[in-house]
Length: 278
Image 1 (spheres, rainbow, N blue to C red):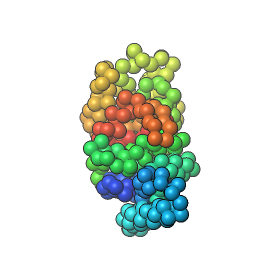
Image 2 (cartoon, helix red, strand yellow; image 1 turned 90 degrees about the vertical axis):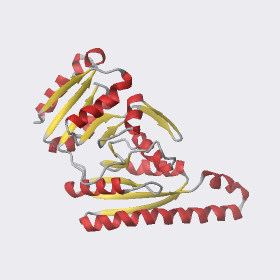
Image 3 (cartoon, rainbow, N blue to C red; image 1 turned 180 degrees about the vertical axis):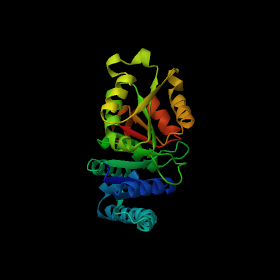
Image 4 (tube, rainbow, N blue to C red; image 1 turned 60 degrees about the horizontal axis):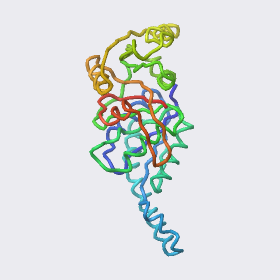
C-alpha cells in the first residue's frame, strides 16, 4: 500500500493539478504526504562563487529568495491539505536545478510513490526537468498527473501498457496497490505478435493477475511505432480509464536525459494520469 507519498509542488508553473491529485489520493489511501517545492537559483549565480566572499553572499541571498518562493507555493498545498485533514510535511528547498533534482531524487527513494506534474513542452521551466529526472532517480513508481487534470484522483479503471519488458514488469509490480483496489483492469498489448515472447504474453500476465485474485481482460492492437502513444491514449479515452501503468524507457545522468520514444511522447502529450517505473 502507498502510505508514504512524495509530491513535487511546482514554483514556476500552475500547481492546481498536482495539488488536487495528490491530496485526493492521500485522502483515499489515508497516506502521509511529504510535499517538496523548489525555488531555483540560476546556475550562473553559483558558478561565479569562485569570486570570493562577496559573491558567495550574493549567492546566499539568491538562495534565500528561492526558498521564499518555495514556501509561498507550499502555503497553498498546506492550506488544502489541512482542509482535507491529511497528514503532511512541507519542505522548501533553494538550489541550482541539478542539485535540486538530485536532492528530490534521493528523497523519493524512501517513499512508496512520487507524484509529479507532467512536463509542459510549451513552457521553458526547471519545473519541467525535475519530473523527468525523478523517473530515473526514484527507484520506484512515479505518478505523472496531466497538467490539465482537475478534481479528484481515482484509480477504478486501470490500463496496463504491456510489452513483456523488464520495465513494464516493474511498473506492474509497483502499481500493485492500485491494481488491488481497481474495479476493472485492461491489459493493452500493441504489436504483441511481433515483439513479445509467448512466455511474457498479455494472456500470461492476465493469468498471473488472476492468481492474485485480479480479473483482467486484454485488448490487442496494431500500430506503427509513431502511432503507439496516440493509440494508447485513444484506447484510454474509449475505455474511460482513470490510470495508465507503463514502463519508463531510457536512461539518465543529471543534466543528460535519454527518453525512449513512447515514453517521451507520453510525457509530451498526456491525457490520463500515468504511473511509470524505470
